[in-house]
Length: 264
Image 1 (cartoon, rainbow, N blue to C red):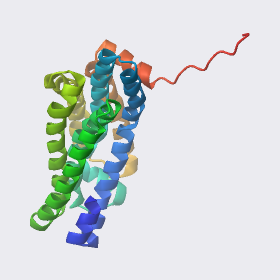
Image 2 (image 1 turned 135 degrees about the horizontal axis):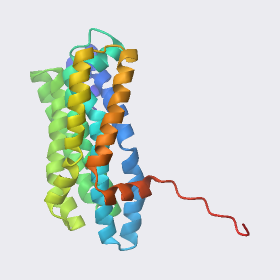
Image 3 (image 1 turned 135 degrees about the vertical axis):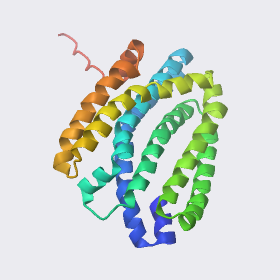
Image 4 (image 1 turned 45 degrees about the horizontal axis):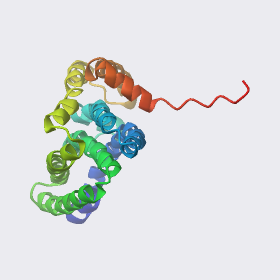
């Protein structure tokens, strides 16, 4: 809907400028939500079996895992947007960089929303979360039009960010915490733990190395991206999770073993 609003309010040229960061956002969110999609069947299974404690542990581990995936994918969009856009489509798209920065922040906020939505559906609370998401969507469209006409292209991305922040601030204390019988602080701690090690890795790779080398082609960005994956991945796995959470996530992501045929 963002691109539609931009096209209607600001015209096709602005829509093309918005589409570049929007495509990167869509790709990053799709990659980051793979693990969350794999957790939903387990959340529903624990609900059906009445295993509330195991469901709570999986929810918190999934929140950390989702946040870890989000920071891994979002921090490059946040810290080197100009280099990513130039490497992908070339020069002349400077107005797209602020949009990409805001959409990177949207990715960080939207990932936990997506996970807790899966949890609420597993707990048969889909009506409440659907109502909140619909209201937020309507508010986002209205605010997008207002900000597009007042501040320009990046105002549409800002509207999406503000809408998602409002949803997160509402659904966690009002819907998710009561449904999970957990304090809000438990969600905050689980979501923030992966951020610190990822931020340290980002300072080394995406700030120091990227700004020293100034890669601006896909070929030059490739080694930087590989270095980021290794540095951030190691930091997240070692410091973003405790041992029990690493074991829980590993069990959920590991494919089920094939049954052994009888008689062998």
